[in-house]
Length: 101
Image (tube, rainbow, N blue to C red; front, side):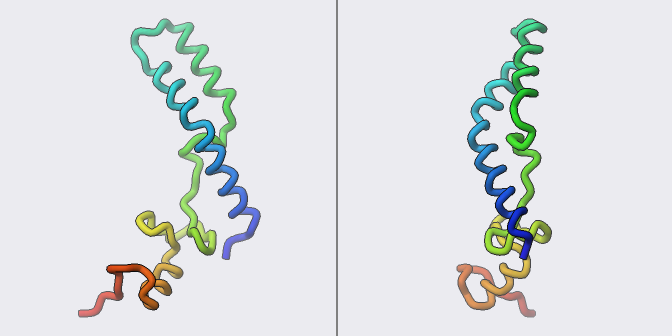
């Protein structure tokens, strides 16, 4: 199990990303707009830089929803490899079973 502070930090960071997503998207469109002047683009870029760094979606780390483990996380399920295997063996994940041939 991951340290509790890491799990809590991840939760706070995801809330921050969700809160600033619309503002970031709007500023990104302004920066990429070819019809705007250079000064307007620079103003938009400064506003983007004034936002918190952790509000950027790229800084998020995939973590297991149960244990908080950061490595070996399957995106489709949102679970770490250990918990995914345990839940699949018990039958809690529909359509998933251990391969045997």
